[in-house]
Length: 481
Image (tube, rainbow, N blue to C red; front, side):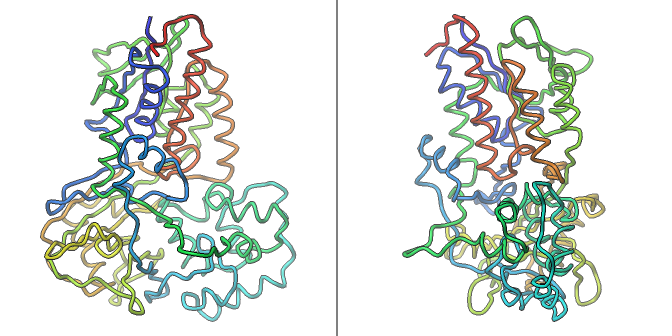
């Protein structure tokens, strides 16, 4: 009898899990992928903007992690991976747009002089003053990024540098985000004996290497849909779209899922389950089989956001900084236009400057604006037309660009980004330990070990490996190799 596995959630973690299950269990296995929405891909979304594929979910992946590159190689799309062009990231802080300084770890400076262009004189003095403070002693404890840094190097480092960078990843509040989960290199340096934040940052900076530097980020020439489409074909699952999973329970040696509408649900009986869904959905489904894990997942909060894609007329000039094209601009919380109007966007990416494959003679100029921070939902309640108007006004304030877009798209991600609060690593360890005690069940996704695409791929692979091991140890069933 062939194995039957349900994968709940059709994002990149779920699709990766389905693919690995197919590779391990063979062609005879029945893999059912259940997705509540009408499409696969989760927070990866390639749209058509002015006739070109353009990512309006996750934009890029960290190329220094190997998971996405290895997966692309297996699936035959490694040649379609591209890397950013030479461009300068900028930040709008203190009423000015400046080049994002080097010599920092997620905005935490190794030296006061390295951030002099972004901080005020008082802010620079606060960084220098840390050298006279008593050494930091975390003793293995976690702490919020904001709490530690405000006490050690001042508010401006947090408000003008660290939070805009963390906001680009988590849409989060530095005062609530975990140091160990969001800036692990800094935490490790402190654990290893660095007594000061600046010393920890200095020891965490990568050592210069001879020769050409390796690219930090990657993307796909035709958008993430290249990777997603190949995953679906290779996994060959039975895809069930538009069906919420309402309950999960033990059924003999396997599992029973209740899916579909509440008045007329259907049941799916399988040997194993991978849950690759956001924390609230996983919490609900684990209430009966793993209540301890469910209770822990209830502590994970979420942030919502929106992304606005703009196709500007051909020839529109994007900003430069010191003669170098700008790749984008992060916007610090509380920044305002010269007239006093607050910014709606938290960041812009000047995609046609950042990515060579999005350039082209006579082609439209592509820009994306991001809106939304944890705890700030008012702007997200605006309708698409007003949100587009405000984001265009922000772009005009930053760059002087007032051209009417040739095309535009507004995409909303409700509850799209889990917040890694203080103690997140311990929380995840508790959840995974409890789930691991239940044979034939595993979890994956952005709520665990990172919100980036490589981290999500890694959790999908780990979940597939876990349930495959359980199935192969369960008894003499035909696995279909």
